[in-house]
Image (tube, rainbow, N blue to C red; front, side, top):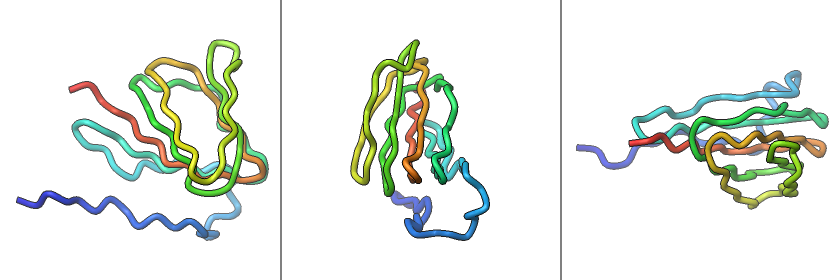
Length: 110
């Protein structure tokens, strides 16, 4: 039995798709968690949305602003190394300043 599963070697300086201002790519979908890589460029906004499950969001590079709540009243500046958590069902939005690379972990109910 193999205990370690390599998901992906993340490329922090990847400029292969610079024509897209918003990239959202699922990189893993298992029984208990889902991992999503998000890249926003040129001040792009990942518009208000919510996840059905609790999430963590880690900023891998760049900077931006994460807002959450019914009126997006909670604000967290994001920069390389920022890690935050959000409960299920909370509306949130991300704005790049000017670009940001995120890793989102979604935790599924057992």
